[in-house]
Image (cartoon, rainbow, N blue to C red):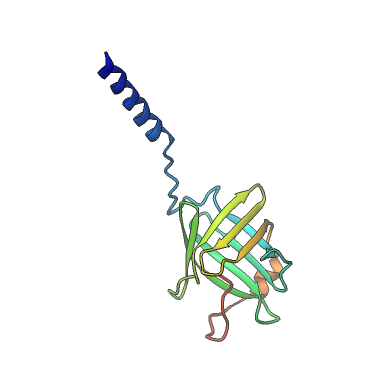
Length: 150
């Protein structure tokens, strides 16, 4: 009888452990509901940014970044991104990686991204529709002196 109680307890514990495990790896087309959508940067390290950044994370795991950081004109960067758990990473169209991965938290129409660097940067984005004039104005660039936002 004692061994039956121990066996039952072990089985209950095993069921509890496996029942609570979540598979949160999302890759290839799994962006729906994660980071997909158009976003505008509203806060950078808890301050209003002195530059403009729009990101469009597409459902097919491609992205476009429209940034007005280092010049008066918007610059366009494209590439692909991957989600693994709560970390998003990306590769630009020229094959170079983002500076780091970003832990993300999405709550309603707000996307918060925490850089995974020695000095973590917190970027907060609001859901938006990227204005057509910004998309039209943006020039595809990847000059050595121009650094992409991510």
